[in-house]
Length: 395
Image (cartoon, rainbow, N blue to C red; front, side):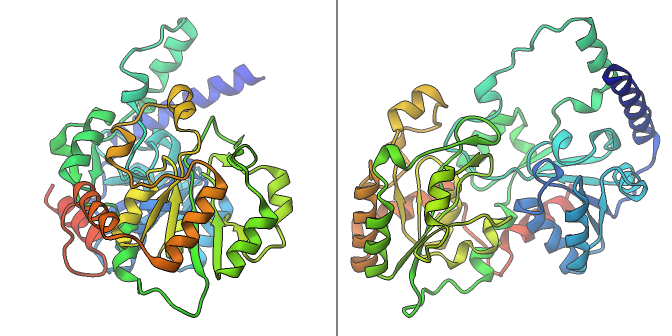
């Protein structure tokens, strides 16, 4: 039965792809998808809403593989369709541009996207860790006859990015190489999701708690457990009291592919001082934070645009480099000291930062990093979306 289902699926999608090749594209139809078609977030969401709200001539359509997301997007007043519905298939077939933040075959229904549709990979962050071809190289796996037949019947699943985004000349070189996309097609526009740092009031308040978000990078595979707490002396009761005494709120946001330790989640579920964040899109609230903590997550590159402090807690630096991935830069060259190698040290640094602020040396190094990873920003509340839209208009 599974084999029959696979054959039917391959033949159906092969036919759809044939239609996608032949069908003319509507110049004003732009389709958007994100995170395997299962989330409404990230650069795709930011640019989709920009196009929809700016009264551009394009018809922006959100495509999802989750009917609940389709309903939620429509509730906000936007146009959205289920990926395999009749209108969803139709608009993907007719799209002039397709925007994704993972990969075409993940975020949209790839058979509907013919070669005449321009695929723009907005991606989902600047990398500190090596990614894409810089990790797995160009070596193709040898396949048996079945594998070769499947490849022949699914040409739409070949990795394809007609255009890619970067945030500076430095990141253009890195991302172009990682994705095997020519630099001329790697557009230095900045990420649309980072418009929030210019469209939102960034002034800290003195009456509210000093809010800090902890955003570690991912470990292992999709859905894997990740405990960065017990082994590094996380004392919930002690830290909760210390933070409360200094009017600090610590928000823990694990990477979307990892799950937090169940014991820890149960322990802090009733706390107002240390909490987990499970929201769909962190960029809806990122500007509310006064400080970020991370280890190797590229999220800190985005947060540099806020001008707010970043603490680095590479608890497992040696093991991470040996077991997970190489980095694009020596860690010390693109991060800010002092490092916290345990939770007690980190909480101490956080309290010190809240009470006394960053040093002048820290601020100088911070600005150098920001200027390396972000090109000068134009005026306006949506500088990165403006730049991307203008670039696309000239293609």
